[in-house]
Image 1 (cartoon, rainbow, N blue to C red):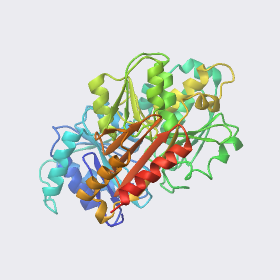
Image 2: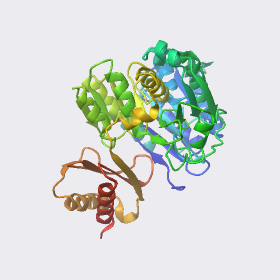
Image 3: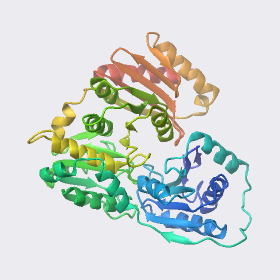
Image 4: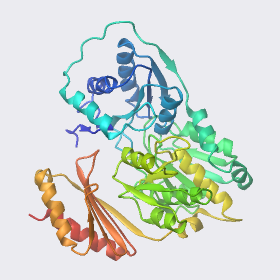
Length: 454
């Protein structure tokens, strides 16, 4: 992976100093800017140590090109989206590699609507980047100006408007948050204070010096989970570095996970408002089951935040998201948002009845077993080779209902399997869910064997 620059329709990621340099980032940003109408461009970044280097390079390029820049400094990805929309900017860029290891960084693109760039617009950016010059000419003309904005207070106001603040204040839950040395601690602190929570935040310094691998999985958080009970907290929250995803743990440190985040938020929203929801095709069936209980539709999109948002807009969904802990509430911003997820979960805790615990709420969700694995994209499992591999897997499950919406999705009684190439890493992801662990293991083993068969 060190030799690979991952470029997609929504952004790029790479190893800093190897495939990703300030020059590469500026060329990509220039391709993006060429597709935008007149107006300022918003820049934000997570806490990675090389973030200032890329922010300065982008800021200098845009200003020299005559573009005004709105600099959010260290800001969560959803906060950047809100600033783009509220300031009526032409677009925005978030400097982040999300959950990738610390030697990575990247860019995520926002449209003027404050959402991740739709695929059609991203295709044009990608084409311009790939066909553009290796070195950009020196810009000429009147330089732009830089204005700094802290979007966290506006973000918190929007989030608070979606929940019963008075109920949360009456419950006064004690919250433990691992901000992961990323971009989320400032807005989280403001949110907890506004909601009247007692709280403790670890990893609050946004310096990118991660204490654990930054993706908030159970394995990566093993050393952090015991700290929740040590702080006598009612709930433990875990953000990824750009704070668009949220994982949850119970008061005793039991990892509830990322999949439960969306399910709990779906319950919170549908308890007050009826309307359709959207999930992607790799998300647990818990959200769909909850939607069915409330008599509303659950629409399915391809994997990817932009695809979820597209489907939300097409169906008038009141909530959407992905099973990676990314919850999208259109009342706040059409971006995955760990802050709205925390607020909705705290509302569930506060309105679930006296003494309600997060553990009880999680155990009351539809109970499924999900496992995820991945395989490196070797030369024989790429392009036509991958197409052939998917066909072999499809043949290995003759009784399943097949969909090619995104990769290969197979649905069968009591479970499903998804096999797809990642958009951000040179790997194939396999996700399976069923009512028992044995069924999941059998499904993954069969798929793995078929994928690698010659």
